[in-house]
Amino acid sequence: MKPRSRITLVALAGAVLALGLAACGGSSDSSSDASANDDAATKLALVAYSTPQVAYDPIIAAFEKTAAGKGVGFSTSFGASGDQSRAVEAGQKADVVAFSLAPDMDRLVKAGIVAADWDKTPSDGNVTTSLVTFVVRKGNPKNIKTWDDLLKPGVKVLTPNPFTSGSAKWNLLAAYGANGGLKSQQQGLDYLSTLIKDHVTVQDKSGREALQNFISGNGDVLLSYENEALTAQKKGEDVDYVTPDATIKIENPIAVTSKSAHPEQAKAFVAYALSAPAQQVFADWGYRPVDATVLQKNASKFPDPSGEFTVADLGGWSTLNDELFDPAKGKVAAIEQDAGVSTEK
Image (tube, rainbow, N blue to C red):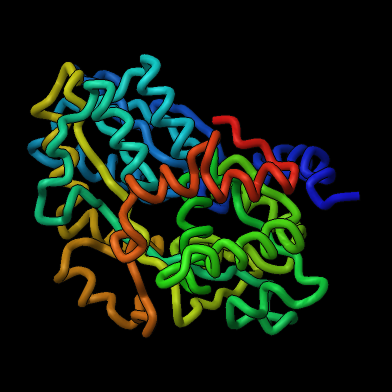
């Protein structure tokens, strides 16, 4: 029996556990009135990817206490980054969007929902960054330290589905680039093929669902964001993490939509999310601040690996999405399909 045949049962178990694991940072897919300001004259809709809810909730509360946030309330929606982007494209109301990766923002640029110059800011349009890391069991019993260790006989790996989850694309690009992809596409693909077909047992819908699945006891190692590991530890979960020497820098974008009915207040919120107090909240929850001063203040928490690389080093999102992740012709899509994984968005 192929490992993929176990996905449905494990995913159901993860879904049942989601409520009980809310203490690990929120549900994998949630919508709410996040504001304590129920009588607010202005209501902003924040649509974001699943993992940073733990940071946005207190950031929203703090913003509402500022002069710029006076009279502003919020509704929020958190879920898999690709799904959230497609929902906004299809008409879901959003004043501010925050995604796991730039292509989910670019989709809304093409739809006329986000301005084309969204990334022309001092932080290149990003609100946080992170790194792909290995989340392991407490004490790291399988001694997982390198990418080669993921291919050891019997090692079971969890990572989300790259056709619904932004974090999954980052995970696979980290594996691809760290194992030859920076110089040879085929070498990187060969590593991914072995990893996905022989070791990845479950591909959940979002990064948060994958973390919940891992915490519930499935798998030996979870490919995830550094911030997910730090958040899990902050919430008291029994996990450790290892950041390999070679890994990718994750860049998380934020933007105001061009269809916002309250653009001034939406811009004020984004400005606050980039301010030092909000950036410290992100840092407290394991996200690397884009504010240089706040990052320096937290430098001991966020060491830089010697072999860190970026998506630009791999050719940029436009090239990578076309060559690797296009559902019809992408080379990673072909590997996933051969492994029995759905590439439907």
